[in-house]
Length: 516
Image 1: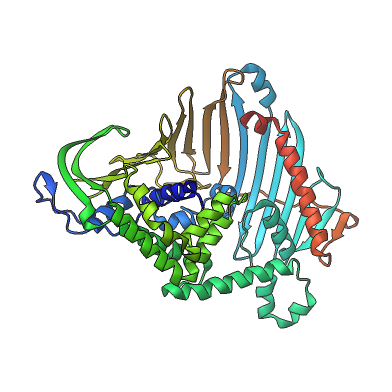
Image 2: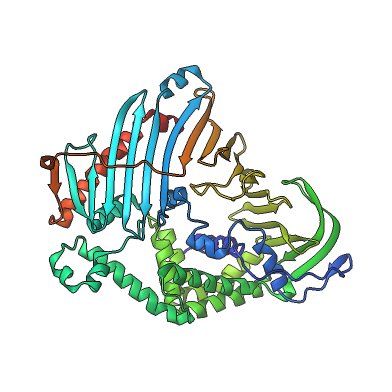
């Protein structure tokens, strides 16, 4: 295992350290200005809770139940009733002509508890429809039909559809499996087909394994998500033992300027600078935890196992983290020395009421200066950035003052999000604005960005309504193909054909081609 892996793990541990949770900060307003005596390390750690847009737990589980989040992350789709219309326009006349009457239209109804799902998807290019897709689940049956792909309507079981959909898209429907249904009705187990038995058995085995391993941490949760959340927090607690009462200092000031949100406050700056011994002790604790908790080793394996191209570097990092054959314990002193010599500084600022308002984490990795920054304005604006030497990416979120709810029907925040990416020679900006209609029936998100002098400025519009008009078309009985007794391979052939043809249509789409 070479030194690059040790250096990479050093950076990984450093970045993980910023995701910290804790109770509300205790702050004594009678403190004198200047240096302050810290009563406990919790005062430093708890300020970080106010500075992250989501807690450590929500990073594992997801920060909400928005439909778009599920689409992009592969998490479980929430109950949804919406019609979504996506279209774009350009300030260049020649490209605007291409975009006229071009759109992506989605109609979605999903009710997990009642085992109902209905999805329509249409792509229109200059007034001509290039894709029409219909899919539904009702009870234990499902249907799939696209005249753009095949003239036939495929009748499926619910489990066949769910397994085919999740396998080809990576998006979870998390619907009830036939195995669960069979446990309630033994007669049905022998009567109904059991598609993709191997996958279903593996899933059940993983559930049982996770539930068993959770006893290592005395976790009382019964679902996998809660178990993973608990394991993440347990590992994080071990890593944060590097923060001690002795390596945290605090200074009070009446004039602290938060430049990115343009606000000056009175408050306390907490700074943590662990020593090599602090890091080394933490790594030894991490070794002991990994050695005694199979659930922790499984959690690390599952997290890194999600990386599609599992390189030797990723495998080596996994081997280190789980302390396989004692390798982390053997490298602990070297990693600790690297961390302590990397100009590692972690500081946070709380205002006079004790609320966290700014975070700055900086260190050097492989000769690159890395800085993570977060600032929070009193009226809700949030700034976050990551910089590597002369390059950086920043996100400034400003919430809307007009909307009572924080997020739209699709899970997007009302207000504006400004994203800036910069290197030595170029700066790219995108502005995302989400608003609610006056009659409260729909949301509109506009994503504005510049694609260069050739195409110019693009506005991508996403309109979403509070209700769905999704429906299945009538098809003659002779056009139906019954797949309910077909083999797993036959069913997957249909889904892969659909997936490949839909992908081809999307990639040749003008609206997507201009954006990508």
